[in-house]
Amino acid sequence: MIGSNWRKKLAEAHSEVSLGRRENLTLIVVKNTAGSEDFVAAIREMYSEFDNTLLVGDEVHWLGANAFRPALIPEANFRLGLSATPSRYFDEVGTEYLTEYFGGSVFKLTLGDALKISNEAGDRILSPYEYHPILVNLSEEELSSYRELSKKIAQYRNMDDQYDMRKQLENLYNLRSAISKSAESKIPAVRQLLISLPKPLSQCLIYCADSTQLNEVAVILHELKIDSQQITGEESTVPSDKWNGMNEREFLIHNFAKGQLGVLLAIRCLDEGVDIPSARIGIILASSGNVKEFIQRRGRLMRPFKDKEKAVIFDFCVLPENPADPIKDLGLVQVELRRIAEFADDALNRSEVYDLIEAHKE
Image: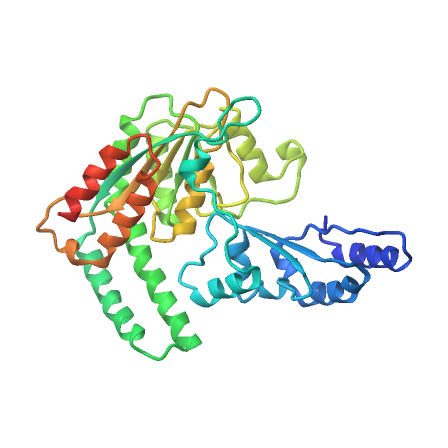
């Protein structure tokens, strides 16, 4: 395991290898270190000491980013990339780089197949889930901003495919996506949902778009006397006696799992690398067309847990309830429908959701 003093540890390991004291060496490294110039140089000095070099990339979609690509060393003659979402969102170059480096997909396990698999004890490896889209609208101001950004996106897409243009285009897409993620109509809608859910509310994760939306939902939870805590990514990462020997985030998640907190409010930071199998309810306010984002969030809720018969996911979707609504002409509707269809495919109530999709297609 390579930590903060990885240079010293790696130098010691290199010395042992050179002296013949080690025949094998396994390094577990975070992506930031793996992609650093110093680490890559150290590995290249050492790899010739071994007959074979195996590189395993977990959540490998990250390694397609410019900052982390150096971690994909050509010296590795055996390569394995693992990801539920290997295609990078709005990054065809990064996706192609990963495909060429790893040689394409060699094995795929669909969610539908995984839901049928049981472990040695006969327990499912994933929890089944219900999926409930909740429809909201854009305000006139939001709709106007969305259309204006769409015009700019169309202009940039017709320009030469240069790096600067791609970055500008990506920024415009992010700005446009933020409009639907933080739509004002989601706040009264989530209030109605929280009022309707059985009490006491427990084991519930709420994914918010930004700090403003998170604070607005926190106010609602306080008014409804629902115990909650926020995880924003700014929590202390240093273990402390104050947190019973854990860091602040670990402490909050631990209390949530024990049932001492009804709701965890999060901004992005519960997407990957966090295991909260006790969570049974997911309220997604910040959905987008980013496949990685919604697959990771669904995965957080499908972890099996004692007495957990199913997970229930509420997804706030910007779709017109009225066929005459001007929003129906926006590409946003197709993005939302694709995500709803993806969620619906393996849901326990898929026929109900398919009816909603067909109604909007018509």
